[in-house]
Length: 504
Image 1 (cartoon, rainbow, N blue to C red):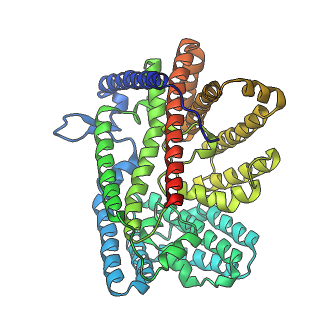
Image 2 (image 1 turned 90 degrees about the vertical axis):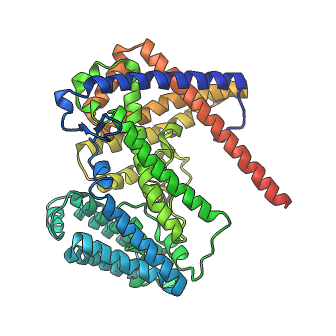
Image 3 (image 1 turned 180 degrees about the vertical axis):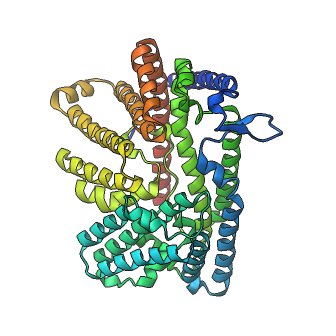
């Protein structure tokens, strides 16, 4: 629902003051807790010496982050730099062959990292889905794609296929699951697009060019085949004015974000503290709420940095990749909640929108969300925590529609119509604040642990009721109002831009 009404400047100023003060207060509590716990025995494995010139220990609980920017940093920089160099040379000398260069370089990089047998394994899955696409049956392509995905997520096939990787190294499991999972999604997208457009006669070569584009191969984001093929097939791509400046700015922002996260981890041990529930239970309510919130923000920042680096390389290759996910701070509806925009686009196009239609009817929406989260569960790897996460988020998405339908019901609709537009916005923001914390709690289950989620819920809703509960809700309400105001300003600017273009 588009927000058309502005609130008084004084009211928005009060919201900004309250939110800033609350974040500062919670941050101070987390900083003191990090200092007090730095030498705890339970922290020894995940809080280790960091940058010497800062003189503080660093939270290294996130295995992937540490590997990316320590032991595998040079490998990543070397591989992506080589891709950029060869892509530039090919674009200058033979631009019509650049898609082939992407595929060959990507395949060689995968073979050099994971071994030739792993490459042959993925080629087998590619050929299987290509053959299915020739039959022109979307249900068969989707079913085979899901079966291929299941073979990489469940035993005994996953154990057998992981044996195709040559050697052992720290990120082997991460690269295996990333490369295999994204390969299946890309091949399924190719097969479904082939069925939808049989007149275009896509070839196996088109699939291989699509799948082995190195920047997207291991970690995504995923572009649907139709978008990738249309962009990479441009013989003489032309850059828009200011595009190079934007690419440089994006690269600089990614580097700055990496440094900021590293500095942050020297002062705030937000990933280690939740692992020690006794210590976490001693935190003030405000610090505990901030800890839960910061865990989700970090996961978003991590995804934004990863996709920011990859997208910078993709933009240099004249592609328009999926953008990083929407910041968790700006989310107060389940319909916009996702941590990977590429996978979200894939699921929406081939499952969610296909079944749910306009997403306005209760039963089709329920069927669409159940199917979508069933596939998401398979993508993440079936286990108890993933089942719980999927159920909670599926419920949250449907509950939003049920509340919307209830609000459109005659008596409630008349009550809202009797309110001023500004008061209606305030009431909706209150529900948005409740939804915001539902999003945090539902996703904290998978991003951290069920035990820590239970601790946060108990402290904020039971032992802290009513003071802590109402205080956290009011601070969140202030944040939601500021987000709504930002959305209103952006929509107004876009409307003015479109009007200006019409006049010109």
